[in-house]
Image (tube, rainbow, N blue to C red; front, top):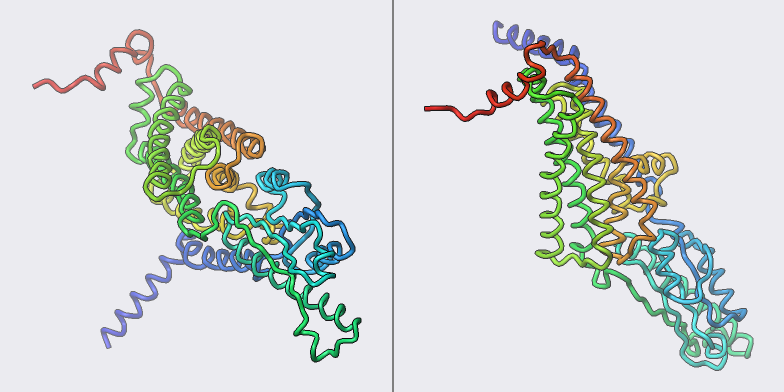
Length: 409
């Protein structure tokens, strides 16, 4: 009986302690529910639809126009325009305006009419395997269905019995050309995006923990005695963590490209510039968030909860256009979305400055905001620390020497 009482008392005590801590309630009950709803909405369309597609129609006949209409009638494709050559399609692809190009050769209608083999070409952006899988399967189904219908009408009009028309059918063949990842290499598809996510989480976590440690250990007063102005301390912290983060980021990118063979097809200067701006913003943001929590444990909890949704919402795996509109708006606020867009276009797709200009400009704005928030948080915390008159002026250098002088035997 005593054991049952102890059990009930312990259970009741833990319940009171748990529900009195809003952080534990949120992490165990609220956050998982929100994550499940968010991810459920993210994949609510079940499959990729309305992939932006352009047409290179070299035949310009009624048959080619019917083929285009058949593709546009499906849920998978959304015809957004026409191009004159594949270079024009490549530039649209770099800008995110098209992922598929259907090339209709000259003489398609003539060859089908006289019974010669006919062939169309589908050029697909293979850097995103989800888009590539969906579109290659769909374009094959569209062309095969269309060609079967053409053959059926043709031979039936010539008096061939319906049961014999399939023997005379000359299907239109589909040639598939996958750009950037023709072998469906999963490493090329996913690794570089995960590297970007690792960079974000590590930088945010390290900076936040370092700043929170200053608060927990009460060393802000010590730092205040060593500096003339809080903004100087803010810039010193920013540049130090930026140097460390940049070294780590370059090492990770070098491993992905050099060790695991992820192709570097674009301008390395674009990637390095975007990485630098991304890191500046992350350092500032991490320090600002930490100044709000003032706890290493709470900072860790908050930042770890950011890891999963930020990568899934970035559009690196599941494309942005296949998400609900409100999730697309949320995803475009996240800095990782814009950084991974630059990473994909430069590393995998071979883009240079022009297609990445909008993303780089966004990252520049993120860096400016991050630095501003970091300067504000450091200035705010250090200004609150008392400093005596004796610790200013000429005594500043002496105090600094005393703090960091090596211990004498």
